[in-house]
Length: 260
Image (cartoon, rainbow, N blue to C red; front, top):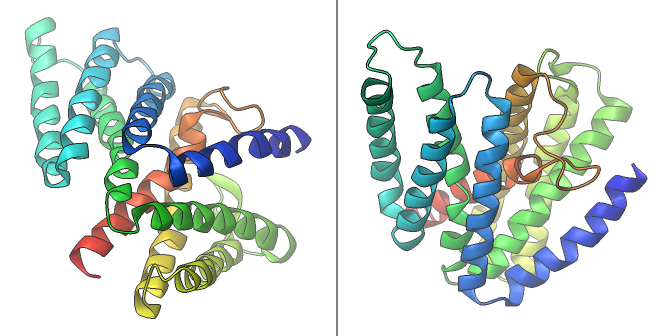
């Protein structure tokens, strides 16, 4: 726990300062580098993955990231194109129609999941985008802490005993409520969201953030690993730190642009 706290104190302030004041290009590059590391970590969690899929995943992620970062509407078509190209790899390199397509599925999942990092850059270009991104960061962190503490002291029903034995239904609900309260408090104070939008985004982040954590826990459980990497002592790798944030930011962006 001590190592976890020290690492958080060393990481969180620079991250917040970068999001608040760094040129947009810097945020774009940092998000891209984080994505490359995450792709490598993801393939470390996928068993029996050929090296060619690792190489292709890095290339495909790069393509999707830079396309989506400039035009968010290209995210879907780009992801679909990577899947079609993935299907051709075993036919072109293995010349075997009976090839195990687990490699294809795993690589496409890695590309799709990690490409959500492009939304860190996409979000920040919106009016008040920096403030909204920082608010979502706080919402995710507070949701995670509240869910953990509330579940530890008051949790009775396991949320997903096989995937994450320590998560509880009570903790999940408390985390979602904490996210809404955080969204209302910060969003209203800095005039970032209307009351309706603050509640909606708070609910989205409260649910999506915890769901993202469960999804990554599923990958780690499948691989038989506690963490996706060792980059951050006490916290694991890039995937461990950005699993909840990436999904939360992407879905919040969709809400803001399509509904708000």
